[in-house]
Image (cartoon, rainbow, N blue to C red; front, side, top):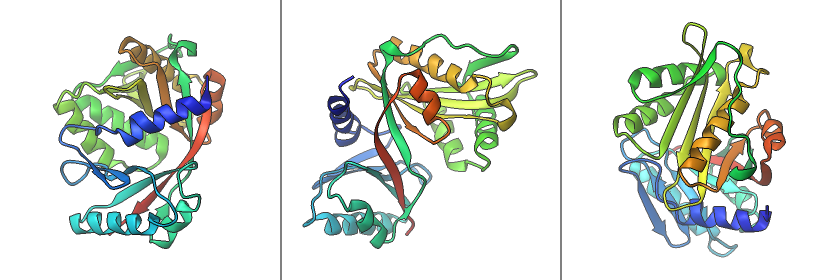
Length: 260
């Protein structure tokens, strides 16, 4: 894989030409910044792309702070290690943003990935299509990550109710319908990419190949829907697994969050 070419394609298709993440979302292009404003009051808002320099970066940052503060919305500036200017992260810190844990942007060509999930006996993957499935999925997510996720739950309920074709939501059930893992695939219309999200497994079920199985399941669906690449923001826990499957680290991404 030509890493530089694929990273440039990712920047263009999923960042600069971003089309939104759900029904009703607004994508606004303001100068050298692309921002997403989620519909309702609970969805994700943030800056997904910028093309700044040392002369205009501070003014652009101040404008986004002003805009989202007037909306009364928390927002995220999704920063990538190759974004310009080189000191953009420092400028965000000085403007009052709080950094969250950095993750590795990893991308793979689907043609080189396994697409047949292998699960432990008595464990199965179920696609989520209704509110009951969302409830199971959120239980698994909260158990895996050790914290509640009300924003995710509201987003999933909205997408399921709207029958959002860009979302494939999965819950992994064990035994008597115990939710042990939750995973999502976002399909980006008009691009060559699918995005993997979630994939967290409850602690006592880790080390049994469940996360790998959800990657394979989602890779198969992405291929069927015409995607060429899969992208994931990988934590330190998932990065080694994804590397062994064929994903390549192309950048580091850090969420910088601003609360009005």
